[in-house]
Image (cartoon, rainbow, N blue to C red; front, top):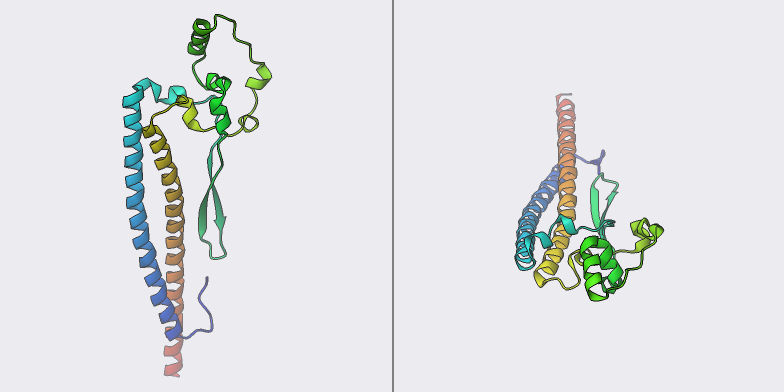
Length: 209
């Protein structure tokens, strides 16, 4: 918001004081949230390390990533009339029913291991999945919980890691919004300061006359 043109030096000075106080309040909150964010990241990686220790290093890695991925969390941005950019995290529910479907587990797991397991258990030929179903976009398959990439029964530490990183994403959006607010407040402070100088120069000219 631009400074008022009709305001005198006293009004501008008061607005300057309010702006600088708001700036330091937001800066203090930003520092607190950054510390919380760092703790969440450390806790998330620690929980992930515990999961790798329990399940095996190769069982929790990029090798288990799904062939088709869709985000469960998205970040939306919006700019208000003051020019500040606000970030909002939108969560989408996962399709947990696929976790109970063996076909979904086979789709994301190594195919050779699935075929060997089927051969030993049933000794029957597995039905061939139509190519059009495999090539379907991820949106048509529904949202899937990424935890199912690593199996149906995963350790609690892996669930805790997922929850911690999700909280970190939400906190990161808040931090980004506060950084934008700080930048907007800084620009407003400089605009008010320039307005104060202009009014002071105008008063000096009038006094000389």
